[in-house]
Image (tube, rainbow, N blue to C red; front, side, top):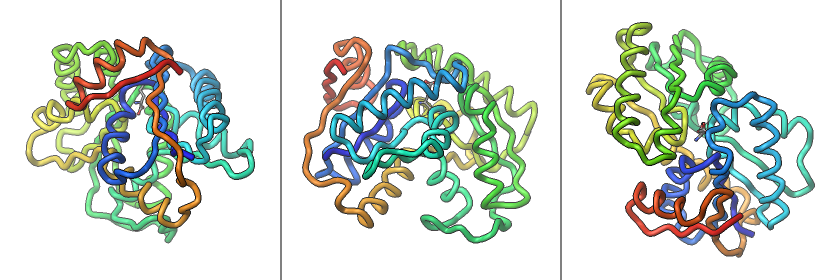
Length: 269
Ligand code: DGL
């Protein structure tokens, strides 16, 4: 049974890449719903329906565990899917909690009461749907007190990355960082709260400057998945890895290879 990694498109590849490095023997089925990307401008209902269909398809295809390597899906669909109940033996996990645990200096599953942490001014960059959900602030409030979060919805950025237009993507990063700074001039930490954004991490780092610690999810999620699987070894026994897309496999393979600087070949989902 391979472990499933899901995203609306190319962004989850940043998580896939980190997981393949952290767990080189793990069989992974990656599923990019490129035909319907971006999710971040859709309604919560729409995101839930698309995510639910994809995850059920991955469960039926033999993955017992699916990681939503997509903040937008984690924000809009995860809780609703878990509350509706998942099939016997199947699991779905999101990417918010490991990131917030890292930001608030907590170990895995530390559910102790909220406390003061090192940072008090945090900039969140995410898709419009993630920002509108306020899921990040909700999860943070369970773990930390006294942290101001200023959220910047980065309209257009996922489209530019999916199109491979990196000049536009970098210009959008600069303008979204400028817009954030007008609301919060001196953030101490910045969260790249969309798995597409590590593909332009350098542009974020340059625009934010050296005094801002940038948190991005790929390595954090890979570490947390390694920990999860060590506790539940049965969830990842055997299986073969596959790269699936609802988009054009040739086009998606070209972009993925270009972004990750390693050969990646997709097939039609
Ligand atoms: N990569 C996704 C995320 O982490 C979603 C991007 C989108 O489709 O808008 O939010």
